[in-house]
Image (cartoon, rainbow, N blue to C red; front, side, top):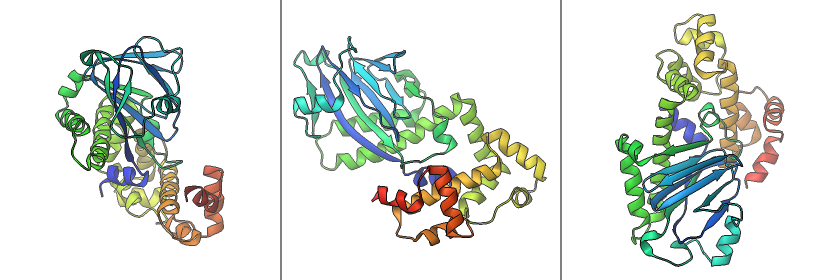
Length: 308
């Protein structure tokens, strides 16, 4: 089983393309919070300043891109961020209908800031160590892209598609942005010790196999003992190694993954609560409902209603 694909499918990774821009100085815009999203901004031409929260500021040039995880609000601007209008206000003021280029001001074509903006979303309450360990902000410079051929090719192709006049570019841009997210994950694996541990867990002959077993059959009545036995390790050594790599115990991982599969079924299937409880490894709907409510502060049926 491809564990990474199963994780991203279950968490419902979706790429969303916002717009490309032609911004003439002076300009600024405040992008609102979106908890289940990781936003990206690619600089095609010009300079971009980004202010996150109140104390973090970044300066980007043509060819650079920034990815802001966790849905954090931020300001994009050229010189002055303090009076930046909210994105929804700006869109209403300029009459942008979601099609074509978002234009602010008039000026020299060669001096405009041209951006490609979008985000990646995940299902409400989607969670996994892969997401929780992502950095709040990641900048990928043009030179860094050049050293990652796959990412560089995807970004260049995505930009060409966004600037194309061909039909159906929206679908292809969305698919390419999802592939881009996966490549960005790979870069983070190399930079972040905790993400490096997760990758090591997936790649480990024994721990990786145990994770594959959990993902292949989350409803099975797994225990530390039978997982350790399946991969040929002692109980104590298996539990210790699993926790070292993933920063959580095997049974915590099992429980969390069952909850994520339950969310996916509540959102994307017509299965009854009783069926979902069984598929999630619970002996009764009541036990499942208690565990679900303890984890998400809402009952499975109420969660399903909010997703309709």
